[in-house]
Length: 523
Image 1 (cartoon, rainbow, N blue to C red):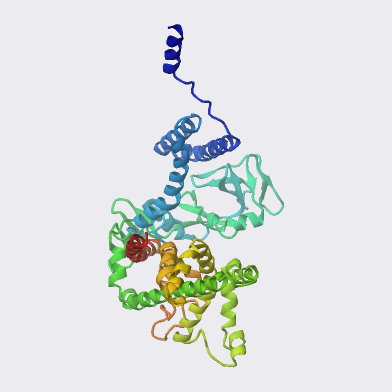
Image 2 (cartoon, rainbow, N blue to C red; image 1 turned 60 degrees about the vertical axis):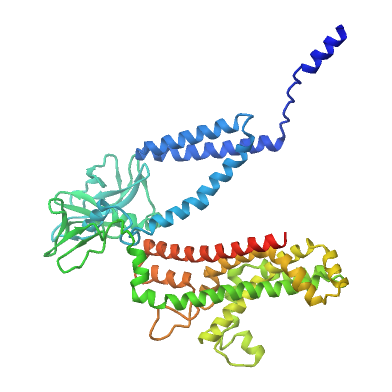
């Protein structure tokens, strides 16, 4: 009876919880994640405190606390692996896409990079002109707690003064050299000539208030006092001077006069769908959009299908059981893929040169390959084919090795010819495995900026349209429009990027849908 009781007690006893083994990899990964989180926290806290961004600081603190709590506990094992991936997904995918889309609804670009206050400051300081008889100062550029300041010496009084964006103040303890410039001063770091030259834009932008005017640098060793020709009047929300008045237009982000002319400096504002409407209604853009899009599709499809056909053909040849020396051939075939693409594109550009190019010399012809629309398009497709087929060769080789040879042998036993066995057995199985890669290759080649920019530069250009060339893709065409002679127009470029994204996403979605149907057939 006692034995039965002991057996029942042992049967109902809860087994001890097994000790979790702590591996070196687990400890190292935990330390690495916590170290990265701590480094980001220490790096971000000082600037957030300095700028008074308390909401961002609170969010950063909560995120750091959550990460520390997650990786200091033994529980929530799946979350330890999901959180880093989610963070990287948000940082490198979600945030760039969201930022691009939001930028597309603004006029962000050259002349519209800051807010209205920054625009007013730039307009006023940029219009400063030296007044007759105003003093000139010997200038030394220095740093005070990382802030750029002027050390000014009045040649008449030999008095040294400190100039900042807030105004002038005495500079006690300054050592003035024989040239009349300040050599050193307590608490200040004097910049040497190369260091000051590297900060030329900051030096030119700094304006020191002085009386009715401001003091601005004239070079790196002299400063002059002058008055702003253009002054902002808050009462009318306008800029006055030079015999005119420019009123703020919040829809454009410019100060505009009665004739519709605006000052060069503006500020960033939301423009709604203005950038998108400009793509569709501007005749300079929409007039050539369809032609460029058509060639873009031809280039991407020819690149993908050509590289796939060539890579698959070579892979099938080397996959044959009677083939010898496959390792040597494979090493030789992947050399184009191993070389830097930008260097190879420049080499191919010179090879297609009409006067001294290797292609004309080998063929014994005198063809202006990059000077005629048809030959230029053929040339860039051939170059892209040479650069891209090793990748298709590698992935097709791997996919072929995963297909059992019994399938093709059974097809041959049933009387199928090699071509029919390839078309009915091998090719469908390859497409099931490689279609996602083909779709991603199409998306890459659709936006293959380097292949065009480094070979034909989008040309040749017709005389009536120097903005669009025969080999321009949408990405190169819009890059020239958004960042050409008119300056950087980031909002406009972002809007065009959204159009390109929509086109590629639509084509990819249709292709993936057909892929799923194909997988269901051959599953």
